[in-house]
Image 1 (cartoon, helix red, strand yellow):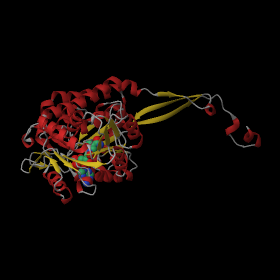
Image 2: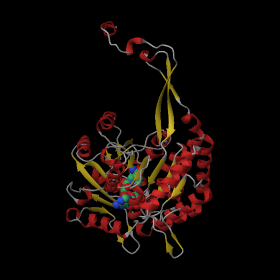
Image 3: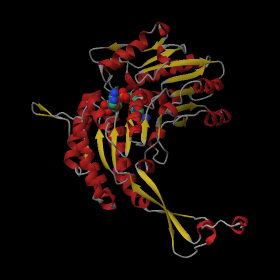
Image 4: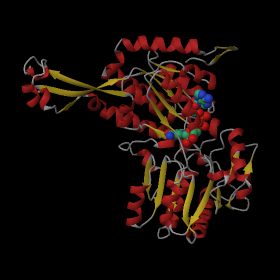
Length: 470
Ligand code: NAD
């Protein structure tokens, strides 16, 4: 661990320290140890063990950082990470095998293969909302691909950051795998170094800072960003099931503080009041009559985010639009599930990613208009559609561009490891999960093998007319 406080002495993690760290890891990487299947598997198993043996501490850290309900931690942070490790342990040998490919007549006789090789020394910068999963999932991908890796967890989730530092120091091979704790200064020091890949999760503003720093060294990046993920609700559906699935994806996912959380609903003017009624009933079934007291809802992460969300709610353009909820407790940083009906497009809440428990509904005359509404904004990380209309579903899949689409549910595409997870346009670039995590940290090296046979004279000067006519 680097950059953390030890006793009363705070170690400064500056550019010099960052440069030293990268140099050290580069030398270790040069030993070639990370390239072996055995080293990779031993480290994936070690990380899995760190999580399994410390599940209670992880639950406590997330309770401290976000009042995250234990079930959400166990399912989304621990469970999903375990699944990632299991997939890697099952498939890695196969992923590491060079892929034989066909060659061209002009290279005859020859053979060719694509050899997957580690990139080198990589940096993972993660966010506060799923601080364990969003840190360890890319890290385990980097390890599986045979890299040395530095993790910079989010300072906004300090208990999780400190636990990650302790666990990685205790369980992992620290010649290759390290944690640097800290905030903007420490991340800036890290970003000044030359990395072989930077994997960043967070908002687009910092994403631009990361990409600018990476450009200086021509370092490739994966940017896992966010955006306004819409939910389109058609009228001819089982509204109760749709409402429950929207609730699970919105409030059941860290109280709306999730990158693929439903950001707003688009439905028809006719359907909106019915949907609101069902949402009210189902929200009460889930969180009771006083959701501010519910143990099944995370709190807002910080007073800054609480103030930001309050501002969205206090905007004049949405006054009188609250159809359900709206209660807040500033001292406890709690905001109740809140549904707003008929919100104007030029309101503050429609102008930025909400990332919290507020869910505006905008209405259209015909549900097909939702496609234009979505396409008039930035490309979202996820888009959801609830419909029984085959033609509309096909139209939606064909015409809406988003990181991922999900029909008749929310969020669950995230757990399908055969699907890439990542954004497009403003919601990010690159993808991971399953084999895509391995690929994100792997260079696919093109190798052509020839012998000394087949030394056709055509390619050698002099370039005679006869050769030109061949
Ligand atoms: P955050 O505040 O934790 O920041 C993310 C990381 O950036 C942290 O490690 C932080 O230290 C670092 N950072 C912050 N300011 C910096 C600066 N000026 N220079 C260098 N580094 C800096 O998290 P956040 O950005 O508030 O996260 C929320 C956003 O992340 C939302 O937009 C959400 O949609 C997105 N997100 C995306 C995914 C995904 O998988 N696509 C997952 C979670 C969150």
